[in-house]
Image 1 (cartoon, rainbow, N blue to C red):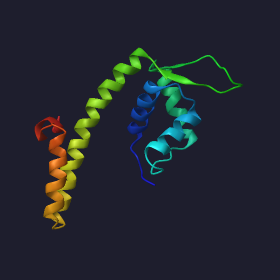
Image 2: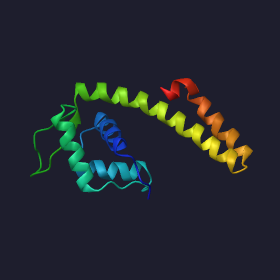
Image 3: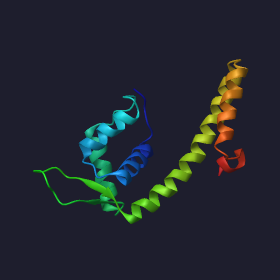
Image 4: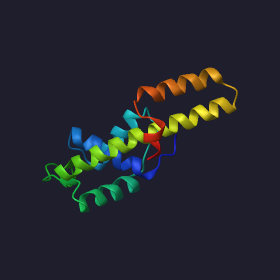
Length: 132
């Protein structure tokens, strides 16, 4: 299992809710599936975050179809937020890759450093852009 920063759950939820309507349980299952079981956010985290997204108008609760199951979908405002978060994430990934290249160099793994920097370069984000 990995530890994931809080903001990543928001990104994951908006991304997945942009693709289909999901309940909190469905969302947790999708995250586990997409990450190969590496990330398993708990129900408390999922439902707290869904409540925050709902309150901010980033998602919409759909009418109930089956018992008490609440399903959600992204709103127009949520799509704008998803776009912003996606750009921010690309920059974060570029910074993290460059940091991994530094770790690789310090560990004496020049070939790994070169591979990681090459991967960072494929993002098309310069180091100056990634700093902002």
